[in-house]
Image 1 (cartoon, rainbow, N blue to C red):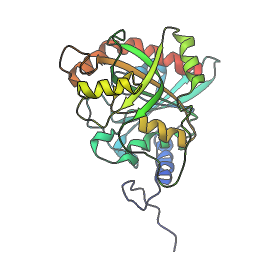
Image 2 (image 1 turned 30 degrees about the vertical axis):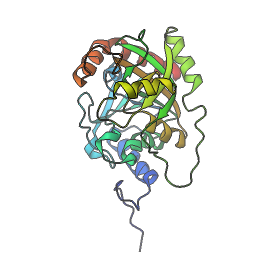
Image 3 (image 1 turned 90 degrees about the vertical axis):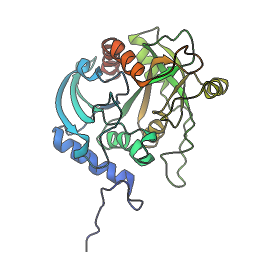
Length: 282
């Protein structure tokens, strides 16, 4: 009797990499794209970047792909899109845009958090761009500032890697890709991103702790995805959009409405920036 392969990512007996492979097959089937060159996870404020990049040739609801579900967070599309674009050398390429990010604080498990990047790798991508909206710890980074991530601190007390699998994270955020980004905008600064568990915002004391241990940016995503991306063999570019000053630095209470508004205001500018970076990556 043939062995049954489960697509239930929540089944502890399932292999999350096999579920990702099956999900990638489904994405290819529904979009008509045989292989993707690059993948993008579009966080708060970054959703409009796909329109700047190229022509959408396919769109899939997250509910139609194994392991995905619609995000409950405002500002996330709940879809996976195929974008055809032309790179800086004139070659036609395809990008997989993951608008169905699962956040750790949603309580769906770290497998679902990591699933998108694993699907991207299984669909052929060699590079992934992870974006987010975050709180800034440097006063000079006003809301609307894009910052390259050079490293992270994972304060979730969790990991997407299962079992005795040891993955080197020394150069997790690619220096090469940060260099490409600076060919588009030489003024881009860089910093260390600190992922907290969420969904509550950090306290002023926690923000000061993050600063003292080397953090420049605080948020609730990205680090766990980046770890999974490295395990999958993807080259990682991380970019944060500072949507507000972090607690204790900001003079006003924090709100998700503020995050969305800052992203909406910066959207056209950062969308064009990200699209040009992707074209130069190839």
